[in-house]
Length: 497
Image 1 (cartoon, rainbow, N blue to C red):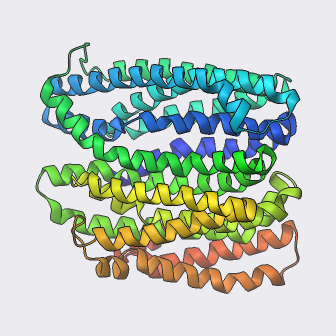
Image 2: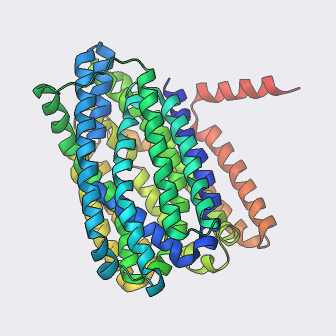
């Protein structure tokens, strides 16, 4: 079930990601560099207001899963409706704040050309509604995930993720400008909410509206209060850097920064979804008192996901300059490729803490995760601000990398052997340590090849092909376990004519 849910969860993000990457050049071409940067700023402000969310979704998944497994329909319904009321109120509060702050944001914090000022103001006001819709949409998705029906949640995410990108491009090409793009996204988000309500009703959970009991409210808010620190840090990581770059360097520089960051972030987001399904699994094992069964699962997932992360991001570094040239234009290579390399390393450092954080929370220690995540978020904001002031967008990426390395290593050293019941040394030997040295060794061997082959599409295809083959073989013989390797070999033999 863990593998199946991982693949479904991956598909929910992979399909929209491919479409999103394909549509970025069309959006830049239709909206212009400044217009695309403004749309990015609006999205970042909407996401940044998510700091109001105390991360109730994390606690909701945990307790909805527990109550469903025990057959406690009353507490299941009370948990759901408590979250629904919270996110309804949160959406209204955040939307009000964004709407009335639009004048201040456009007038004082962001540098936009005079001819774009009115459209930017309208886009921010419409974005207020987008915040409310996004909160509701995100919360409704926790129900199928808590039921471990990742097939249903992934189908919804994939379909509407594709539609929202296509609708944005259609609006931009139709000449509606940034306002039309925002309206198109709002329309798709509203349709997604209607579908999610229908899907939850089809599960026949018997969730009539009810008043949440005191015990349900206390359990959910207590857990989520500490998880909120991680939410703040996540919001800072995802949006604060863009707001800082936009405020200091302007929307044009923000576009040159956002494009490579989006490329690396989208790729890493896929592999995070592979690992995130360990959260309900670890919670179930902890609740059943079967912690010993978590040991091999943890080490195996750490080893595989780390290697996949390193392989994917390594290929981005090897082929990133040519990809940027053909994806969005040659002007993005000079400024964007150094950002791409630095952010790739930063995201790799961040990814090493994903699985330990999920297991740490599942075992009931969100306080530890939250404190480290908040320190990383605040440190990252300070370093990005300092880096942007000194070195522009390259300095911003360098600041992000430095913060991720320092706080990430500190977190790993602290939790292993304490809140995560596996020693750090064992994790290094049998978990991510092996994946890192094998992957880095292969990539270091391939780097000289990149400069030896002719520049251009043919040379890039040759380097990527060599990387995929080399990393695949190294993973098969040094990362994959004996049983899994034998199964792969047996499958390959069956496929022979």
